[in-house]
Amino acid sequence: MTAPSVGQTGFLQRDPIFRLTRITGRLLLYGLLIVMSLWFLAPLFWMFMSSFMPLDQVGVFPVQWIPRVWMPENFTEALRFWNFGTTFRNTMLITLFSIVGDIGSCTIVAYGFARFRFPYRDTLFLILLATLMLPFAVRLIPVYAAYEAIGWIDTFYPLIVPNFFGNAFYIFICRQFFLGIPQDLLDAAKIDGASEVRIFTKVMIPLAKPAIVVIAILSFQNSWNDFLGPLIYLKDPDLHTLAIGLYKFTSLPGQGGIYNQQMAASTMMVLPVLIVFFLFQKQFIQGANISGLKG
Amino acid sequence: MGLLFISPWIVGVLLFSLFPFVASFLLSFTKYNIVQPPEWIGLDHYNSIFTDDPLFLKSLRNTGVYVGGSVTIRIVLGFALALLLNAKVRFLGLWRTLFYLPSVVPIVALSVIWLYVLNARAGLLNSLLYAIGLPRYRWFADPDIAMIGYLIMSTTWVGVTMVIFLAGLQGIPEEYYDAAKIDGANVFQRLRRVTIPLMTPTIYLNILINIINAFQVFTQVFIMTDGTGGPRDATRTYVLHLFDHAFQYLPPQMGYSSALAWILFMIIFFFTAVIVTTSQRWVFYQGGENGA
Image (cartoon, rainbow over all chains, first blue to last red; front, side, top):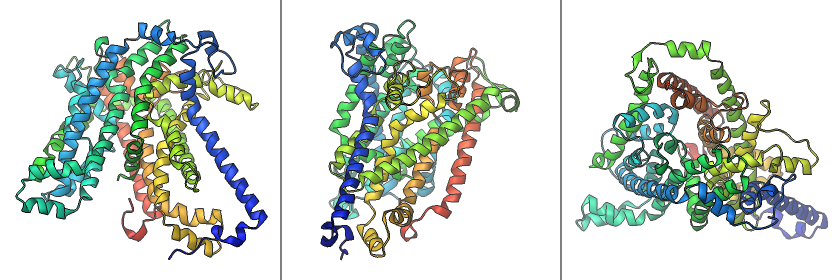
């Protein structure tokens, strides 16, 4: 039985001094939460607002929050210099293929680690976890040289193909999930004469849907937000992604001062991510949680 | 059969981890510009890094400032926010979403936004400082404080750490607090004697992950300084320095860059090893088994 906690027993709550400190405590708590939310959201709110402002209003000190006149033409102007259509299509393409590759490879590999006994399995799994600690800078140069040698620079392959060979972290997530599925379920399928492949596709995959959604979201975030990969592998402007397009747009010579259009461009890149975030909040938070528990 | 299932990963780890790991080690002893085959020069690169490259030490120091500052911010602020949200607040889901929101914004967009947050003339941060009567700073022009700007920006990702801590806090059984209350422990004693010890496994993993990531800080500095690490290399981070040699220098110095990469690997490995070995002394596992 849970012992009654002191704060909830009657005699203290009727004590005026106790109630007063409790109310101040709550006020302080919510005050802090509001201040912190403002801190986190103000930059994004300002991005959105300033993307509708006339240029001279963006440079005013102290900062102004509401557009003096609303100028949706900042967006059309930004689109004139920034090839949003092409970069958006390229980003979508890379992202979709990456998600497919990540889900396919990671579920298969995770199933292998979770449900089979084979020599060196635990050693191999430790190696998998160890690769999480390998800095990307160590891989960067040999991998780049290899792509250069096989003519993959200025193609999407370097950004897509590796995802078909499993991502250590997503495999970890998926394996944890598979381990939680009761063995009885698989034994029953086996008794019914289902093959391993059938058990995997017909029993495990449908059950693993929550884990797959988390992987899809992490993979989406990874590809959509990636900067370094497209920066070194995609030189042809027709192949640029949103991230590179936005970077080029904001660092274009002579474009340094058009803050309002730069904010309009940023808004256009951020909006799809925010929509996905609001649709799948729970899975985003789950993804973050699992990443904190790995190791 | 199991090996068949994991075979994609085995191929992947050979191609994308083991091969580059070994190859970059070998390349670090060569002169290599991609166009011509690598030429063996022994320890020359390591020699010039340690004796002849003032930017090596500078970028290492800048990165050290970022690692120390941003990891502290993420752990302390993330833990504090998680404690606030764990105090039975209303609309918990809403607050959690609001705090987490900035971390999902693409880093390129965040960098563009923060260029104006930290803008000296009309930026948000200076407006805030002005409003509460504090002096304004030239965040990007003053070498002494340029890294501080990136530390302030790193609060953007506190939400991720907070969410992880919050999940940990919610896993602590209420009975422990009730028992402590009956023994007369006040809020601070409960925090020190119950909450923090039970949270050490989560704190430990977060310190580890954040240190490994923070050492590799690159993208925001690259975008916000247009690849220069300015002013006067005051924000040149280690990976930016390494990237410079491999991808911005002509001809590219891939061998030198590989040597820098391996030094970074050793540094990260060293920190990881120290944290892992000392963890036995301060990380408390319930029931002796790994709580994670």
